[in-house]
Image (tube, rainbow, N blue to C red; front, side, top):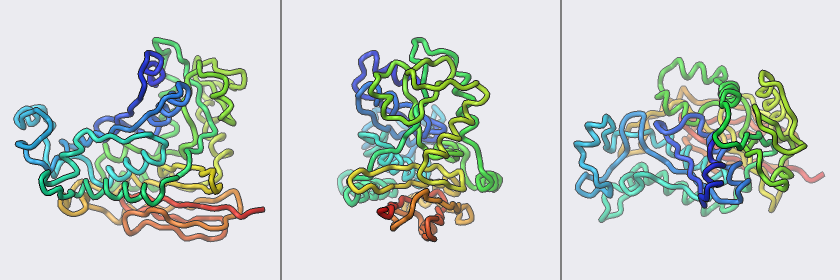
Amino acid sequence: LAWHIFYKWGAGYGLAEVGPWASQQSQFVIASLRGAAKAAGKPWGVFFAPWGPEGCTSFIPESDWSWSCPRKMLDASSWPVGPELGCSSAMQRRIFFHAYLSGARTLHEEWGAEGNLTDWDKGTLSSYGLVTRDLLDFQEANPDVGEPFTPIALVLDARIPPPDPGPWDKIVTTLYQHGPADAANAARKKTPEAEANCYGPCVIPEVFDVVPSDAAADVWTRYKEVIKIGSAEGPASAKPSAEDRVADRIIAAARELSPFGHTSHMPMQINHRAADNAWIIGLYNPWGAVRGDVYGIGSVLDSASTQQDVLHAKFAVKSARVLCAWPEESGIEVRGNDLHAAVGPGGMLIVEVRAKKL
């Protein structure tokens, strides 16, 4: 929640560091940075740290590291490095594709060279590098995935030092909850907790930004619903809510303004592409992948962790097609205005939906 302070003090760019050891509920982190960047009129990006749940991913031998840090120092820190360490490639994939759809200007990798290649001279891609290539191929095939649909602004008190974070803690606790499928998958213990929580289950789609209260008047015109949080003032259009009801109000506004209803708590992005009025949906399954098969796909998958969702369009659907689905269990079936989606273990599904012209 401090991003606006960095911009106010002269930062030209903001980076959200994400990864199993660096962040939990990373969607909220990104919503906070995105809102601060909009208010400042500055760009922002995502910085992927491949540390955790145990150690850090590196396929390159110590003699070729770009890091001037002896292995013995990393081992002594309890954060060793190696090809078998770090998060699953499934987690990496979700982070990379989520960043692209979230509106980030750039994506940075902390151990990019050491992660993407098994040999610097030959340029051989690792399992990590294959995920990076998949993202680049997707971007080339889909250069316009629209803009994040965020009709809701949560007003952050922009004073320095920041006031009591208590109201925000309650919002995060209420929004990022397990649904029945998540509870069942958590009980199976097939997923490292740090990976599942990094982009954790959420009761609503990602349709809000966190916007500092001192944002210019034109910034607020981009939002249909402006909700004050805690001691924030914000614009005249902002509506106050009792602290014990504000999370419920956010949930109600998200369900009202979202063009899709959905039945699971899987993390869900909604983008709108102005060029053809299409909707781009991203669904992400946080369950069922652990690091392994490091010279194959970089993950060991538990197919029983596949999740189901029914996306109900609030408009007449003309067509729906899959832009990207991984792993093979992922896909959709269109039934009228309902999209029956499956997202495989640790997987992701990106779908383009077009409305019928009235």
